[in-house]
Image (cartoon, rainbow, N blue to C red; front, side, top):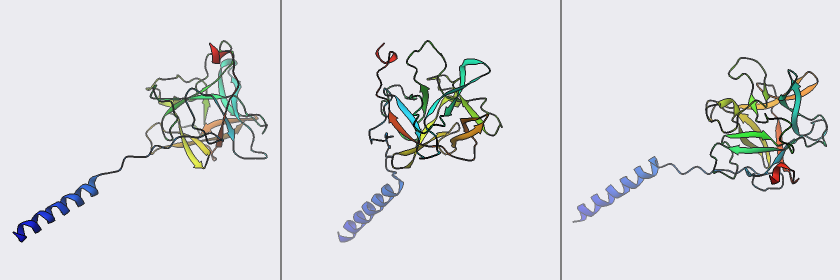
Length: 213
C-alpha cells in the first residue's frame, strides 16, 4: 500500500513539474501614456514632441511640400522648441481597440481642423522597400490597409513617459527606429538614420471643426 501511495505521489510531482515547465505566462500588455500619465486613446489627438530640451527642436508637423503637391509632404520636426507641431491620431490595426498599446501596429494620421485643405495625412515610409539611407516618411499612406506595411508603426517605451516611434515591417523583432534627418534645411522624419527621435505625447485639447462633424 505504501508503495502505491509513493508511486502516485511521484507521478503527481512529475506531472506538476512538466506542466510548470511548458506553460508560458500570458504577456502583459503595456499601455502608452502621455506626459501626464494618461493612457493614449485612438479617439484622442496628441502632439508628438521632442523630449530633448534646448536645441532639440519642437513637435512634429506637416511639411515641407514635395514635388509642388500640397497633399504630399514629409512629417518633419519644428526647429522651434516651443512649437508643439500638429497633432495626430494613433489608429490601431484592430478597429475596436481604443487604448494604444506598446509594440502594437498603429497608423499615424495628422489632424487638420479644415479637412478640405489636404487629403493625404497618413504617415508612410516612402518608397519602401528600398535601399536608400535614410528613407523619409511621407503623408502618402493609407489608413486601415493591413496589406500596406509601409503605413504601420509601433510605439516603444524608452524611459518612463518617454517613447520612440519604430517601423517593424517584418515583425516585432525586426524594427528600425524613426530618427531625424537634417536635409534641405529641414528636420525630416526618416528611418535608417544615425539617431533616434525620443518623444513625449501631449494631449491636444483644442475642439476644432473636424472634431464636431
